[in-house]
Image 1 (cartoon, rainbow, N blue to C red):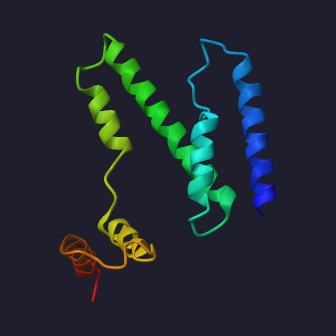
Image 2: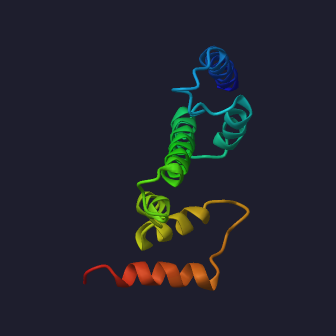
Length: 136
């Protein structure tokens, strides 16, 4: 399994080098994660549940989406026809805070971490609020 991951990481690096070799300033938004970041995700994926490549793909998609959102916000700041707070409205609309259900599930998933085998009062309060929203 480790050999497969090393080979996969080598292919990702090779693709990165190939895609970044020919830069076009009109279309290049730097949406390809750097190899160092992919290597960090590779190391983190060893500690995750589920398939290795799903974790890497999800992290890369989130990273790219964040970069694209920041590029859009920067463009809106420079656009003379936009209101001064349009970029903030866009960021707020695209990056809504997680729901109580998502927060509670993340806290419970954190209990599977060997370094975190308990829930503090804030975590328990979040789970309680999520459960109280469920219908009877």
